[in-house]
Image (cartoon, rainbow, N blue to C red; front, top):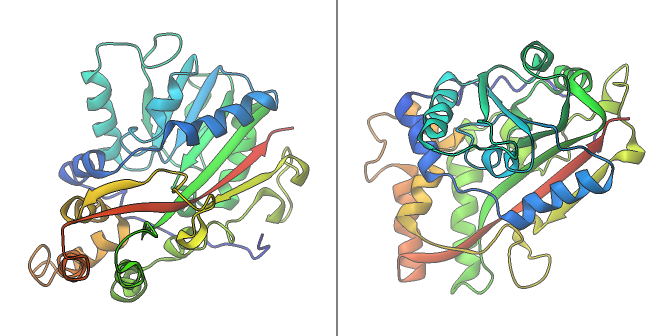
Length: 314
């Protein structure tokens, strides 16, 4: 892990999402497979974690990880800096006729930042047992996040930070090399001018994410002995030689485009080129045109790499 001090990425794209953008995000972003979330829960339980309160930071609309994990906890709370993401999460929650947690309670969704967790949590819960952030921590001010996390976590609690990076075609894909290059070219060439430090931290699989012992002085309550790093399918190379750990997904190019349209770099590109957005000159439209020519069709099996960082509160 890098010991370089990380500056705050200052990401505002998601924070400024409109109601329509937040709804599109909830509709087009896929969730995480149960077996992945079970890795987190098993680690938490096997290391003495309790199942009182879940706190999901950077929860977005709460669809991808907050709701699936909440089923195992008596209380659950999702926090995000985006008011419209939280409004969408509340609307989705209101549509459910049933309880969302193990105790039958609803999930609480709050607007707030990763550096001010104690201000939010103290008013509702005593302490947190599992604190999660799925594909979000690269936008946090980690120097502020770690002291905040230490304050709200119970002893024996767990912090789980993970990131799913880049889309890759399955190696069995016809013309695999050319398809892979088309996906990577979008991210690393066409969208490169719209990349912020947080995007690079994500793409580098959290190798450069600031950890509690990298801060000066180090944040008390976390030690390297309680740290676990897990990687799957790094750079698209399948760990088991057969399937992406987060799942092989057969998808149309249009659906892939809708999902990529919710990402921060594509959003910034479209904001910079409103006259080209969703026309034949749109970066996603151009990528899909190239992919159709390479594939000779409209479907492809894709997946992502994944990195999971697990920390224990002493």
